[in-house]
Image 1 (spheres, chains in turn orange, cyan):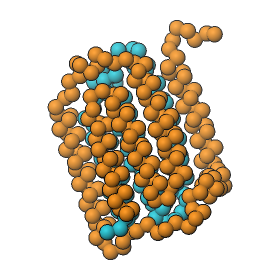
Image 2 (cartoon, chains in turn cyan, orange):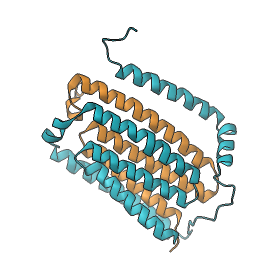
Image 3 (tube, one colour):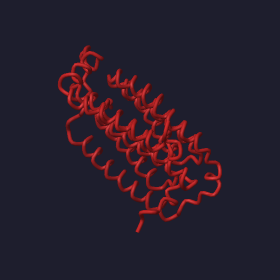
Image 4 (cartoon, one colour):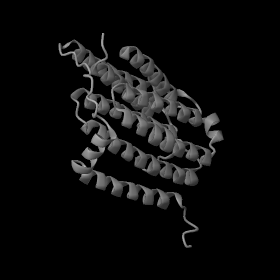
Length: 172
Length: 101
Protein backbone atom coordinates (compact mmCIF):
# COMPACT_ATOMS: atom_id res chain seq x y z
CA UNK A 1 0.00 0.00 0.00
CA UNK A 2 2.71 2.43 1.05
CA UNK A 3 4.81 1.38 -1.91
CA UNK A 4 1.90 2.00 -4.29
CA UNK A 5 1.37 5.51 -2.94
CA UNK A 6 5.11 6.16 -3.12
CA UNK A 7 5.20 4.98 -6.74
CA UNK A 8 2.33 7.24 -7.78
CA UNK A 9 3.77 10.29 -6.04
CA UNK A 10 7.32 9.73 -7.23
CA UNK A 11 6.24 9.28 -10.85
CA UNK A 12 4.28 12.54 -10.65
CA UNK A 13 7.25 14.20 -8.97
CA UNK A 14 9.79 13.09 -11.61
CA UNK A 15 7.44 13.97 -14.48
CA UNK A 16 6.90 17.42 -12.98
CA UNK A 17 10.63 17.94 -12.49
CA UNK A 18 11.29 17.03 -16.13
CA UNK A 19 8.58 19.49 -17.17
CA UNK A 20 10.26 22.21 -15.08
CA UNK A 21 13.47 22.00 -17.07
CA UNK A 22 11.97 21.35 -20.51
CA UNK A 23 8.98 23.68 -20.83
CA UNK A 24 9.58 26.77 -22.96
CA UNK A 25 7.72 29.35 -20.92
CA UNK A 26 9.07 30.25 -17.44
CA UNK A 27 5.49 30.59 -16.16
CA UNK A 28 4.73 26.97 -17.10
CA UNK A 29 7.99 25.92 -15.46
CA UNK A 30 6.97 27.69 -12.26
CA UNK A 31 3.54 26.01 -12.23
CA UNK A 32 5.21 22.62 -12.78
CA UNK A 33 7.55 23.39 -9.88
CA UNK A 34 4.57 24.13 -7.61
CA UNK A 35 3.21 20.72 -8.59
CA UNK A 36 6.57 19.09 -7.77
CA UNK A 37 6.63 20.78 -4.34
CA UNK A 38 3.15 19.48 -3.55
CA UNK A 39 4.01 15.89 -4.52
CA UNK A 40 7.18 16.11 -2.41
CA UNK A 41 5.02 17.25 0.52
CA UNK A 42 2.90 14.14 -0.05
CA UNK A 43 6.04 12.00 0.05
CA UNK A 44 7.06 13.65 3.35
CA UNK A 45 3.65 12.94 4.86
CA UNK A 46 3.89 9.31 3.76
CA UNK A 47 6.84 8.60 6.07
CA UNK A 48 5.62 10.62 9.03
CA UNK A 49 6.94 14.11 8.40
CA UNK A 50 3.52 15.72 8.62
CA UNK A 51 4.64 19.10 9.92
CA UNK A 52 7.46 19.32 7.38
CA UNK A 53 4.93 18.49 4.66
CA UNK A 54 2.67 21.34 5.78
CA UNK A 55 5.63 23.76 5.85
CA UNK A 56 6.70 22.56 2.42
CA UNK A 57 3.32 23.45 0.94
CA UNK A 58 2.95 26.77 2.79
CA UNK A 59 6.48 28.14 2.41
CA UNK A 60 7.68 26.59 -0.84
CA UNK A 61 4.58 26.15 -2.95
CA UNK A 62 3.00 29.23 -1.39
CA UNK A 63 5.60 31.90 -0.75
CA UNK A 64 8.70 31.10 -2.78
CA UNK A 65 6.87 30.20 -5.96
CA UNK A 66 4.69 33.31 -5.75
CA UNK A 67 7.94 35.28 -5.58
CA UNK A 68 9.11 33.54 -8.75
CA UNK A 69 5.84 34.24 -10.55
CA UNK A 70 5.92 37.88 -9.44
CA UNK A 71 9.37 38.37 -10.93
CA UNK A 72 8.47 36.56 -14.16
CA UNK A 73 5.44 38.78 -14.64
CA UNK A 74 7.40 41.88 -13.60
CA UNK A 75 10.01 41.30 -16.29
CA UNK A 76 7.56 40.52 -19.11
CA UNK A 77 10.03 38.54 -21.19
CA UNK A 78 8.02 37.80 -24.29
CA UNK A 79 10.67 38.30 -26.96
CA UNK A 80 12.98 36.13 -24.92
CA UNK A 81 10.86 33.12 -25.76
CA UNK A 82 11.04 33.60 -29.51
CA UNK A 83 14.69 34.33 -30.15
CA UNK A 84 16.20 31.94 -27.66
CA UNK A 85 18.54 29.57 -29.42
CA UNK A 86 19.95 27.09 -26.98
CA UNK A 87 23.39 25.89 -27.88
CA UNK A 88 23.47 22.31 -29.05
CA UNK A 89 26.85 21.56 -27.46
CA UNK A 90 25.95 22.66 -23.94
CA UNK A 91 22.71 20.74 -24.21
CA UNK A 92 24.47 17.50 -25.17
CA UNK A 93 27.22 18.02 -22.60
CA UNK A 94 24.68 18.74 -19.86
CA UNK A 95 22.66 15.69 -20.80
CA UNK A 96 25.72 13.44 -20.77
CA UNK A 97 26.98 14.73 -17.43
CA UNK A 98 23.52 14.43 -15.89
CA UNK A 99 23.13 10.88 -17.20
CA UNK A 100 26.55 9.97 -15.76
CA UNK A 101 25.47 11.39 -12.40
CA UNK A 102 22.21 9.44 -12.57
CA UNK A 103 24.09 6.20 -13.30
CA UNK A 104 26.35 6.84 -10.33
CA UNK A 105 23.37 7.35 -8.00
CA UNK A 106 21.65 4.29 -9.46
CA UNK A 107 24.73 2.18 -8.85
CA UNK A 108 24.95 3.08 -5.17
CA UNK A 109 21.22 2.78 -4.54
CA UNK A 110 21.25 -0.64 -6.17
CA UNK A 111 24.19 -1.63 -4.01
CA UNK A 112 22.27 -0.45 -0.95
CA UNK A 113 19.20 -2.44 -2.01
CA UNK A 114 21.12 -5.68 -2.44
CA UNK A 115 23.57 -5.41 0.46
CA UNK A 116 21.44 -7.30 2.96
CA UNK A 117 20.06 -4.70 5.36
CA UNK A 118 16.48 -4.06 4.24
CA UNK A 119 16.38 -0.40 5.31
CA UNK A 120 12.65 -0.41 5.97
CA UNK A 121 10.88 2.40 7.75
CA UNK A 122 9.81 1.48 11.27
CA UNK A 123 6.36 2.55 12.42
CA UNK A 124 7.05 5.81 14.21
CA UNK A 125 6.07 6.38 17.83
CA UNK A 126 3.17 8.74 18.24
CA UNK A 127 5.00 11.81 19.49
CA UNK A 128 7.68 11.56 16.78
CA UNK A 129 7.68 14.51 14.36
CA UNK A 130 4.96 16.28 16.26
CA UNK A 131 5.24 20.07 16.38
CA UNK A 132 6.26 19.73 20.01
CA UNK A 133 9.27 17.52 19.46
CA UNK A 134 10.44 19.54 16.45
CA UNK A 135 10.19 22.84 18.30
CA UNK A 136 11.88 21.40 21.37
CA UNK A 137 14.79 20.41 19.18
CA UNK A 138 14.92 23.80 17.42
CA UNK A 139 14.82 25.86 20.61
CA UNK A 140 17.28 23.81 22.63
CA UNK A 141 19.77 21.89 20.56
CA UNK A 142 19.73 24.13 17.47
CA UNK A 143 19.04 27.45 19.14
CA UNK A 144 22.23 29.07 17.88
CA UNK A 145 21.59 27.96 14.28
CA UNK A 146 18.04 29.26 14.59
CA UNK A 147 19.24 32.69 15.68
CA UNK A 148 21.84 32.81 12.92
CA UNK A 149 19.06 31.99 10.45
CA UNK A 150 17.27 35.17 11.47
CA UNK A 151 20.40 37.17 10.64
CA UNK A 152 20.57 35.41 7.27
CA UNK A 153 16.97 36.37 6.51
CA UNK A 154 17.62 39.98 7.54
CA UNK A 155 20.67 40.17 5.28
CA UNK A 156 18.67 38.65 2.42
CA UNK A 157 15.84 41.17 2.86
CA UNK A 158 18.19 44.16 3.00
CA UNK A 159 20.22 42.84 0.08
CA UNK A 160 17.18 42.22 -2.09
CA UNK A 161 15.76 45.69 -1.40
CA UNK A 162 19.13 47.34 -2.03
CA UNK A 163 19.55 45.51 -5.34
CA UNK A 164 16.06 45.92 -6.69
CA UNK A 165 15.51 49.54 -5.63
CA UNK A 166 17.43 51.00 -8.56
CA UNK A 167 19.50 54.16 -8.60
CA UNK A 168 17.67 57.41 -9.28
CA UNK A 169 15.15 57.59 -6.43
CA UNK A 170 17.19 56.76 -3.35
CA UNK A 171 16.35 59.77 -1.20
CA UNK A 172 12.99 59.93 0.50
CA UNK B 1 8.68 -5.45 -1.63
CA UNK B 2 8.19 -2.93 1.13
CA UNK B 3 8.81 0.78 1.01
CA UNK B 4 12.39 1.33 2.13
CA UNK B 5 15.06 3.95 2.57
CA UNK B 6 16.60 3.12 -0.80
CA UNK B 7 13.42 4.16 -2.63
CA UNK B 8 13.56 7.61 -1.12
CA UNK B 9 17.28 7.99 -1.71
CA UNK B 10 16.86 6.88 -5.31
CA UNK B 11 14.10 9.44 -5.87
CA UNK B 12 16.25 12.09 -4.22
CA UNK B 13 19.13 11.25 -6.55
CA UNK B 14 16.91 11.38 -9.63
CA UNK B 15 15.46 14.77 -8.68
CA UNK B 16 18.95 16.10 -7.94
CA UNK B 17 20.20 14.86 -11.32
CA UNK B 18 17.27 16.52 -13.09
CA UNK B 19 18.18 19.75 -11.29
CA UNK B 20 21.81 19.47 -12.39
CA UNK B 21 20.78 18.83 -15.99
CA UNK B 22 18.41 21.81 -15.82
CA UNK B 23 21.16 24.13 -14.62
CA UNK B 24 23.42 22.98 -17.43
CA UNK B 25 21.09 22.98 -20.42
CA UNK B 26 18.88 26.01 -19.76
CA UNK B 27 19.94 29.55 -20.66
CA UNK B 28 17.15 31.38 -18.87
CA UNK B 29 18.37 32.62 -15.48
CA UNK B 30 14.95 32.25 -13.82
CA UNK B 31 14.64 28.61 -14.89
CA UNK B 32 18.18 28.00 -13.65
CA UNK B 33 17.11 29.29 -10.21
CA UNK B 34 14.12 26.92 -10.34
CA UNK B 35 16.46 24.02 -11.10
CA UNK B 36 18.51 25.00 -8.05
CA UNK B 37 15.29 24.82 -6.00
CA UNK B 38 14.79 21.31 -7.37
CA UNK B 39 18.24 20.31 -6.10
CA UNK B 40 17.51 21.75 -2.65
CA UNK B 41 14.28 19.76 -2.58
CA UNK B 42 16.19 16.59 -3.43
CA UNK B 43 18.36 17.24 -0.38
CA UNK B 44 15.21 17.72 1.71
CA UNK B 45 13.82 14.37 0.57
CA UNK B 46 17.02 12.63 1.65
CA UNK B 47 17.01 14.44 5.02
CA UNK B 48 13.41 13.53 5.82
CA UNK B 49 13.96 9.93 4.72
CA UNK B 50 16.98 9.52 7.01
CA UNK B 51 15.15 11.26 9.83
CA UNK B 52 12.26 8.85 9.56
CA UNK B 53 14.57 5.88 9.16
CA UNK B 54 16.71 6.55 12.23
CA UNK B 55 13.75 7.84 14.29
CA UNK B 56 15.58 11.03 15.16
CA UNK B 57 14.04 14.46 14.68
CA UNK B 58 17.24 16.27 13.69
CA UNK B 59 16.84 15.64 9.97
CA UNK B 60 13.46 17.36 9.95
CA UNK B 61 14.88 20.33 11.86
CA UNK B 62 17.54 20.62 9.17
CA UNK B 63 14.84 20.69 6.52
CA UNK B 64 13.56 23.91 8.10
CA UNK B 65 16.97 25.48 7.81
CA UNK B 66 17.27 24.33 4.20
CA UNK B 67 13.87 25.85 3.40
CA UNK B 68 14.92 29.13 5.04
CA UNK B 69 18.16 29.26 3.09
CA UNK B 70 16.27 28.43 -0.12
CA UNK B 71 13.84 31.29 0.49
CA UNK B 72 16.71 33.74 1.11
CA UNK B 73 18.54 32.47 -1.95
CA UNK B 74 15.45 32.86 -4.13
CA UNK B 75 14.85 36.41 -2.88
CA UNK B 76 18.41 37.59 -3.51
CA UNK B 77 18.75 35.67 -6.77
CA UNK B 78 15.54 37.11 -8.17
CA UNK B 79 16.58 40.62 -7.12
CA UNK B 80 19.84 40.09 -9.02
CA UNK B 81 17.90 38.96 -12.06
CA UNK B 82 15.69 42.06 -11.88
CA UNK B 83 18.79 44.29 -11.80
CA UNK B 84 20.44 42.39 -14.64
CA UNK B 85 17.28 42.66 -16.72
CA UNK B 86 17.16 46.38 -16.08
CA UNK B 87 20.73 46.79 -17.33
CA UNK B 88 20.84 44.26 -20.15
CA UNK B 89 17.19 43.87 -21.23
CA UNK B 90 17.57 40.10 -21.13
CA UNK B 91 17.50 37.19 -18.68
CA UNK B 92 19.59 34.81 -20.77
CA UNK B 93 22.85 33.86 -19.10
CA UNK B 94 24.56 34.10 -22.50
CA UNK B 95 24.23 37.87 -22.27
CA UNK B 96 25.91 38.09 -18.87
CA UNK B 97 29.47 37.47 -20.01
CA UNK B 98 31.11 40.55 -18.55
CA UNK B 99 33.35 38.55 -16.21
CA UNK B 100 34.03 35.69 -18.61
CA UNK B 101 37.66 35.81 -19.77
